[in-house]
Length: 385
Image (cartoon, rainbow, N blue to C red):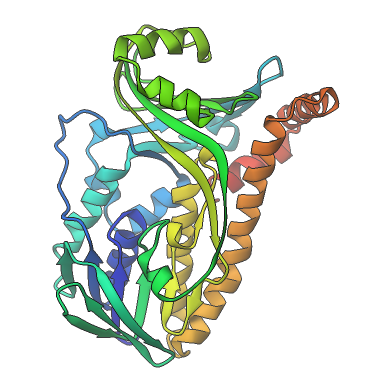
């Protein structure tokens, strides 16, 4: 693969991983990030922003050489996953059924970003533009030029936009999105328990929205509570003691004592870019698509975007950039749309209280739990295997 000048806008999980993998293959990277990265401390409280990383995402981080850089006391493997509707049979997944040690891993986003940046800082072919924003860009099939907020100009053969759901680059490219508001907010609550580290994650579907439990390292955990905006606003107004009382009264039963450490919330919005590339610019991760977080697939879809683009750039380097980007769109856009649509169906059907549909949901869960080889296939697909 010929060495190219590549601009990566956004140094979050997707952007930093893209930049590192391409730098390791010899590309010259210009990494633009509008915030200064602050490295977390190993003894700091757990951050609210955590993600469930699939086996495939773990392999990609191993390929980049950063997985083993994560502090062990910030990483939690889970072997079991359960999901159910109140009053229905539980659908249970266990990694031992497919001969693996874990279904996935829960880690703080900031720690993944920190170890990626740690490795990027050691790359001589990466130039950093921290605290800078793209103000204008000139985009053509032959290449791209960007102008930063300090009037600095950068020229490259390719620009990769990983600047999140409100992507400034997507706006500068005039790429339209299809979007709607789920009219629901998600509340994240970090708790400390009196129980040992858990190896299970679970989710209960309710008419008001799902409730989920994510294990964190040691005796920590994250609760995810979906509800209408007014309810979440009320919960946010409570003291930690009052919020604990609300959890005990309204959340699915937690089989241990706990204390509330931190909480926060955000609205749920679905977005999908109507195209993934234009000229010599391409969208990855949340810049191209956001998804309902009920299945924890957001970051994993973004990492699949990264893997697809990096492999195309490596294996088809003789092709013009726009041709490569068209192939990337053809591979990733249908796959992301399918996952978005699947999650939307789960979300909307779980909120419908028609007796006939409720019976159908319970029947599907029962069939899925007893489907044998099909259930194992679903597990492997969710893990990216």
